[in-house]
Image (cartoon, rainbow, N blue to C red; front, side):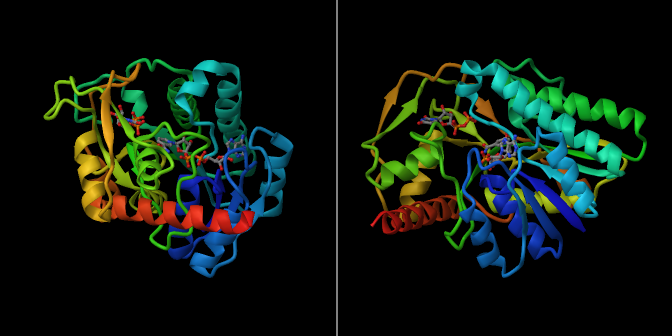
Length: 338
Ligand code: NAD
Ligand code: UDP
C-alpha cells in the first residue's frame, strides 16, 4: 500500500517508516520538521535501502495536504504529526489545539475528498487519566489535566463521529503507553528538545555525564517500591504495532492499547539500565512531579487477539538500544561541529 505518514521524521514516525518499508509498503512522509530533522529521512533510507518520498509541509495547510493526495494515490494515512510536550501545552494551549486538532481535521477532510478509507491515529494512554490499572479500551475516559491530552481525546471523538456517518471509514486509534529505546542500528532514536522531561532520555543523558544525576519524582506512591509505575514499550515494537493495525483495519473506529501489559517502577528501570549497559545512574529522591499518576499500564489483550500483535523486546533491549543511540547521536553531533 501507499501510506502517507504525517510526522514521519519524528521519533515514533521514523521507526514506523522502517517497519512499513520492511513490510513492503511505499511511504510518503509529510512533516514540517518543527521537532525533527530532515537527516532522519536519509537515515531511514540508509537502514532500509528503500526510497521514501518526503514533503516538507504543515498538515494544517489544506492546500499543501491536498497536493499530496493529487500527486499520489494514497491508500491510507498514519497520523503522528502533533505537538506533544505536556508542560508546554499548558503554557501555549492555543498552539496545541490549533496544531493537533486542525491537523486531524484537515487530514480527515482530505480522506473524504479523495476517498481514502484507512486512517491510523496516534493517541495516548494519557486519555485514561486516573482510572484503575490495567487500563482497558472500554473504560470511560477521564478528563485530562492538560491541553495536550485534550487534543488526543478530542481527535478520537472527531474521528469517531466521522466514522458514524461514513460507513467505509476505517479508523484504528492506537493508545501508546511509554515508548522508549531506538532502532537497533543506533542511527535513529529520540532526540529531546533541551533538557528531557521523560525518564529514559533523562537516564541516557545522566549515563553520558551530561546531567549529574537523575531526580526520582517521589517514592511515597502506593506502589511496590514507592516510585511511579509505567508501561515502557520498545519503539520498534510500537512501530510494528502500526503495521499490524494497518493490515487489520476494518470499517468503524477500533481502539487498541499498545503497551507490554507490564508495569515497571522508576527504580526498576534505573536498575535495568545499569545492568544492561554496565553504567551507573546516580539519583536522588525528590518531591512528586505535579500531575503525575502513580500507575499506568495497559491491558493488551485486545491488540493481541484482534491485531495478532505482541511485543518482542523487553527492558534489556529498551535500555541497550536507548543507550546505543545516545552514544552514537552525540558522537556524530560532535563530528559535525568540528
Ligand atoms: P515527535 O515530536 O518526535 O514527532 C512528531 C513529528 O510531527 C515531528 O517530526 C514534528 O516535526 C511533526 N509535526 C508536528 N506538527 C506538525 C504539523 N502541523 N505538520 C507537519 N508535521 C508536524 O513525537 P513522537 O514522540 O514521535 O510522537 C508521535 C505521535 O505520538 C504524536 O502524535 C504524539 O502525541 C503521540 N504520542 C507520543 C508519545 C511519546 O511518549 N512519545 C506517547 C503517546 C502518544
Ligand atoms: N520520572 C522521574 N524523573 C524524571 C522523569 C520522570 O522520576 O526525570 C518518573 C515520572 O514521575 C514517572 C515515570 O518516571 O513516574 C515516567 O515519566 P515520563 O515523563 O517518562 O512518562 P509519563 O509520566 O508521561 O508517563
